[in-house]
Image 1 (cartoon, rainbow, N blue to C red):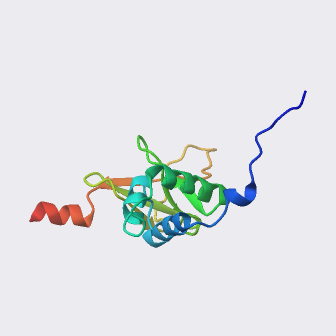
Image 2: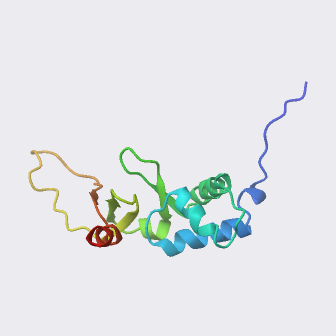
Length: 141
């Protein structure tokens, strides 16, 4: 009896398509973490027929290629930013009004203060929550 295995053609898994180029362009230009639906919304300007399923599939491939990194926020689906953005230690700001996320460059946090004796920090993540500039402007008007 012959045994059949699912074989994936790796050349098609990482091929360059117009959808992949458009999705990459949006993520690379954003300089902040985006939800797949935000990526789709931007890509629709150039490719009106791109589906959300295609965006998810391409993002998954870009993560597997190591070009994108998932960004997790408590209680929310992952967003994605480029590996170049993620390579530098930074924190995030999440607007509670419009749900957009922003990178906060650098880190001025001194977390070693107050640690119990014998404790050592290996890494940390900080998410600040509030309203972005556009949402604050909308409230003032």
